[in-house]
Amino acid sequence: MRLPPLSFGWAVSIALALALSGCGAFRLHDPGRMQTAGEALKSATELSSGGGAVFTPMEQNLDAVRSTQEKLRRLTDLHEFETFRGVLHRLGAEELGVRVVEALEKYNGATTFILEREAAAAQSINDQLDRQALITRILNDSTAESAAARSSLDTTLKRIKTRLDWIEAAQSRLAAVKELAGASRPAGDVASVLIGGLDPKTDTGKAVADAIKAAETSLKNVESDKRVEAAEQLVKRAAEQTAASEHERLVEMQRYLADLARARQRLAVRDQIVACNVVPVLLGHLYPVLGNAEQMQFVTVYRDLQQRHSCIENLEPSASDADLGRAWGGGTVAQYVAADIVASQADATSPLFVAAVGVLLFHERGVFEAAQLDVARAGHRHSVRLSRIAAQQRLGLVHQLSEGLEIYYRGGVKPETVAQLLLAAAQVGALTFIGVGQ
Image 1 (tube, one colour):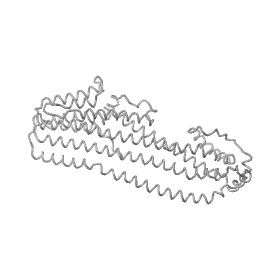
Image 2 (image 1 turned 180 degrees about the vertical axis):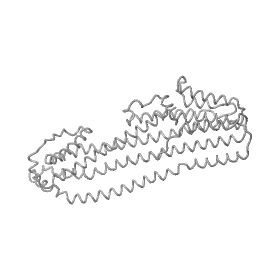
Image 3 (image 1 turned 120 degrees about the vertical axis):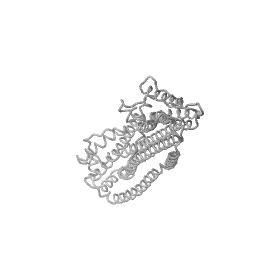
Image 4 (image 1 turned 60 degrees about the horizontal axis):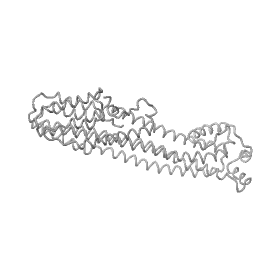
């Protein structure tokens, strides 16, 4: 099960708890709690360094399953092909028609499956992006009012690119923010870098600006102290870490959607080959001699192909061919091929028909089945990777809070100051990137 992105409310609640936990006086140095906080920080550091290890075996398992599935599929296909080749010459038109229709239904189903997965993936990612209400307002890229845009792969990829450009620009500006020294206060600098473009006249803009201002006001009342400066550094580091995590998450979304697009494009090429080159041959040699039930099924799958490809002509449901009927004569494939060769000599086309049957039922079938499995597997891999990123975000927050406690118990920093610093970090980081419903 995929881990959800870190919520802003949780980060703020922790910060507020720190704010309410102490009095207004400076915290005296507490050796015992200092040691406990230091051990917590060490544990958090170790946890953060190996927090994503569990997800690597998950991806490796996907690769192992894929390899096994491919081997089993090759063995199954080979067995079925050998069996089919042994009975093909004895099959009648009706029996062969049933197999052809079933194969075309699977091809249409594979295409539908991939298109549906593509639309669902786009909708899911747009839902995640829309929940980042602050960024959505800054970039004005909401898709909430357009169902077509929400399910469009191309539109979603463009939206992700816009966000990546925005975050990369913010990261560059953030890197230019000077390291703290003495009276230098980063809260406003960091905020202006990350929320640049947000209208301060709006409710959201005013709320963020007020939060930043409150943090700065608190900081002005604190003496310049190395311990205070260390606490202030949390603001910039929190913003940097959150921006990096969000960048990684967007890159993963982009990779996943691009994989789906490539899978659809590869399948579309093979689908066109089947529709434009194989199906017409089968149609000309088989359809007119099928029974009414088989003809109706053939028409149904043919209509689906026509919606995707303009290369195939309209099919008349009542089509008939007296010469073709006589050639089949109610007999088997072997008798039909023999009759066609006798009648047409070098111009006989029945051998091409037999080849088309083999291509449709066996050669192309593996391509369509593999495409479905690859798309399903890509969705699983995407879920694993998003969970890893979300887990790393949580571990990063644990580390930041542990570091804040360690600074606090050194003494000399008011509890409300640390709370304001962590709140500012949350406002700049979690609120901006991973908050919900701001």
